[in-house]
Image (cartoon, rainbow, N blue to C red; front, side):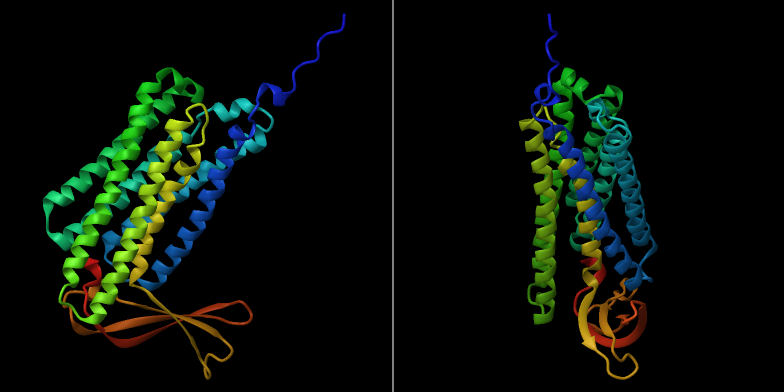
Length: 332
């Protein structure tokens, strides 16, 4: 009697894409955001060489952590799509995901939220509000650490279903505390910046309006991704769709921080006709953070000019100008 034909792989796994798709989308999105972050870091390095040491340490530490996370995610992608190609069991293995997404991602988010808490403290001088924000940031990181420990011990994602209630609670703490923290940061920054601009000059109000828009937009982005992570995780418990937002959320935090730091830079395209002939020039005007003790005074600004010649080479030139500054750049 003829043996029945073995079932096809597509019959055994009806939704093959739901297994292979999320890790791929996550690593692609992570790499894209890492490229944007690298550009932001280059601008920061060129524009603010005299920033205070603690801010430099924060910026470069966050970038280093993000680089390590990207390397770990790439190693995981190589394992499932190259060396383990065709073996679906590798998609179920936790491997370094507990470290790259949970510990490193949670640490970056906590550092960025603490950075915003410091800015709010400088604006408000309120230890209570700052303490609440720091507490929520630490609560979110505690949730990410606990989730990472459970993941590391489980070894396989499928084993998490055996302790569903615990992982639900820990993951919920991680993402919900982060969301609340982001909303608090956006609300407090909006309130104190508006309060700061009342009765100010028109230039001051324009700068504050820009900062308000930047604060609200970045807060909405990170809070929305956290909410999406929660919704996807609780709605599709049998699939790993949540890997996509989780792989990107740390990069979003670091990018929003550098966008805020680099918001002191003003871009302007101009043309040169003598020394810099046939050169496309992009100038960056910025206020150095060590020149912010006396607001509403004429201060010296430095302009970095980036010039790209026709042969593809890049040159920089620094210039000194005078500008009226009405807002303490370090405070916002």
